[in-house]
Length: 346
Ligand SMILES: [Zn+2]
Image (cartoon, rainbow, N blue to C red; front, side, top):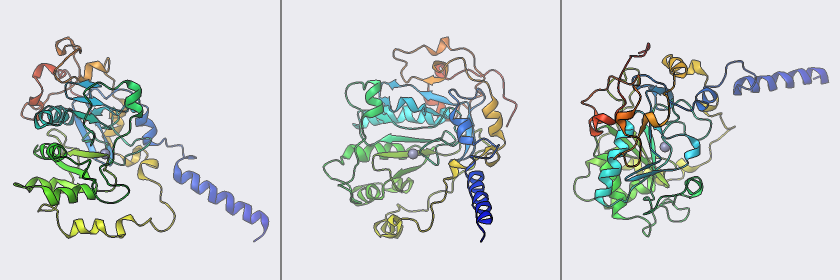
């Protein structure tokens, strides 16, 4: 090959790489558009698309502090979810406290309007996924700096695949059991070692173990996923987990070398790093363009309302109508942002 030809080929190859990663493409990346949003889309709460490919409207934040929770990593601005998920977290925090779990340390939920994230998670895009630390909240309030820097504690023994019995307690089982007891919770992702621990130790009714699914990571936190909420016709449900408690051959596979072998061949780009708006449901364009609420506080769930703005003072927002039969009934009605107009998209 002549040198000029080589240069041309090399330049074309480079251009191809840039086009592929979006760097030279005129289409902005969806993660940049959604990652730039500071507040949710004012519209009826609706999730669009799938957990790893979508967005949502009518998002609500969980307050930085609640009676039984503390939100972590505040700078990420990922305290946003579909109101049904936020209500589920509030209820879990309250009921788990009665079970002996001092309170939830809430990790990432979603960006204000969901969508792919600039960093981290493939899922968490439609406001229906939340990460909860396996560390119960302390008796005191963390400072903002601590919320950025405190490390979660792995439940595993060293770098093994097994739970460290000095860290695992009956309260860990109880908080997972409580979360799995809610009909709207469809899956809880945990490290295979934690699934195995539950398989080996849970007594009595074991049906809830069906929802607890082994997955990579998830030894510092568990991942709670609720199903498509009522009123979200554009939300694509995930297939139900296979029947049974999952303490079977499918779990044994995780304790072979195969799941832990490095992938062969060149690393493929992550979907979230190449998605443009064309990859997402059409409704996500309207979600991006929708107006923001007057303030974050106007759309923040504050639990028992301690030290926070009373809901009666909230400005009227375009949220709703809200299905009273949904889990939202767990929130006192006066704390749900009031409906006014319907958005122009389905
Ligand atoms: Zn997660």
